[in-house]
Amino acid sequence: MNSIGQGFWEAWRLIITFDPDLYEIIFLSLQVTVAAVIIASVIGLPFGAWLAVNRFRFRRYTIAVLNALMGLPPVVVGLFVYMTLSRAGPLGGFGLLFSPSAMIIAQVIIITPLIASISHQTIRDLWAEYHDLLISMHATRAQRIMALLWDGKRALLTATLAGFGRAIGEVGAIMIVGGNIEHATRVLTTAITLETSKGNFAFAMGLGLVLIMMAVLVNLLIHTVGKTERTGTW
Amino acid sequence: MVSILPLTLTATTAHMRGKKLAGPIDLTLDKGGLTIVIGPNGAGKTTLLRLMHGLQRCSGGAVKWAVPTPEAQQRQAFVFQSPIMMRRRVVDSLAFPLRLRGLDKAAARAKAETYAKRFGLGDLLESWAPMLSGGEKQKLSLARALIIGPELLFLDEPCANLDGRATREIETLLLTERDRGTRIVMSTHDMGQARRLAQDVIFMHKGLVHESNAADDFFASPQTPEAKAFINGDIVE
Image (cartoon, rainbow over all chains, first blue to last red; front, top):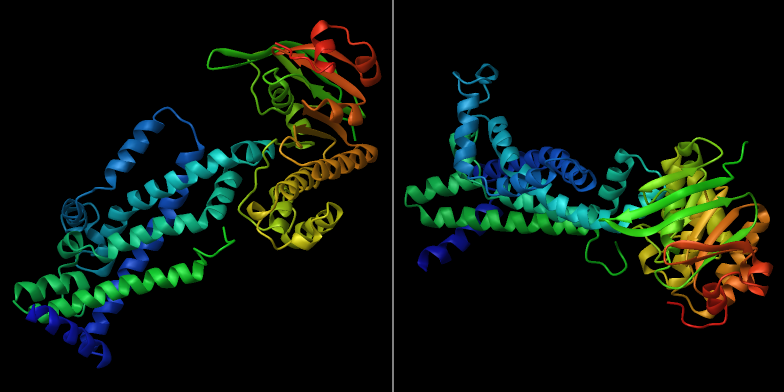
């Protein structure tokens, strides 16, 4: 209980004193997560829409696999990315291991199925509603997907935010591929793990509260910018 | 420009999951005028319209236009019984079919504003389409269909869920469009509406075209007992 109370104070102290280490960690956390969410959205949203609009032979299995991939164990993804980017791996030559880029790659692999799966479900419902209209207007496949993504954009924010939520709180994969190197690859979650292992619970709790506040703030910001939950807005 | 009509259906049938929806249908749709497709519920009116428009694949026979089918499909539009409202503002909904055809944003918006005013939606340009009333939604559907300047317009019971006033507004707009030269094919089970609008009548029953005739002749002397019963307001089974 004492640690929790101390954690609150520690969080406040770190924030209001503009602790450089804390802000460096926050900045890197946001940088890695936002980059991963953008890349995963660019891949996942159109893929989800494509999957909703198109009929092909193994569609049902593809959806089942996609849904299963939502539960990808991060440590396994981390291990896979580690082996791929390590010197002996196929992409070892790029020297990306223990860099923010490696962390972004791991997070993209983890959250793309999540974003694609949620967007597929969202677009599938909208496609059922729009199907006759878009067919009647002879919209091309690309035009259909664009129209569905555009009109479903507010619902698709949920998919993106789910991806953000998973990525910002992720620790297993980025610990493996990033290495938790101070001033290089240390982010909030890996820092919390480190401080906890050192027995520095108050500081770890402080970082945890900052992490929660950051997640809430980003969600609020996106909902405000996206004008969701307003009467008469679709 | 060469007309897409006449449209010829030859022994056309439609099935869904092994169940026959309509057919075999032999029918020719010529240029000009307003044709009403009538018949009891489940007669195949919607299926016939969807077959002609290409929304329903024919399982047998043929649907043949005077020009190649892709070209014919670009020059026709469809208005659905339940208006499909895109999650956009009225002006953007109207501009959508024009944008699909490659018109730039400013030109599409300008034309959308003109059509909105013509269809009594001028004050609702910035309203969200799904928030409109039933009558406004159907007017928007009609304007959205006509904004591309189709030669042929299909309407599937467009007034089925509307009150008398909204129905009258839609009918007035349709008659104006007919006078402008748009070929209209519309289904309804409202005999009053059929009498008010029809120049030609197609009477359907159990998936078959029982009668296709000029409206005056059809109402004066129906050729089949089913058509006669339907006109008299009897239950047709």
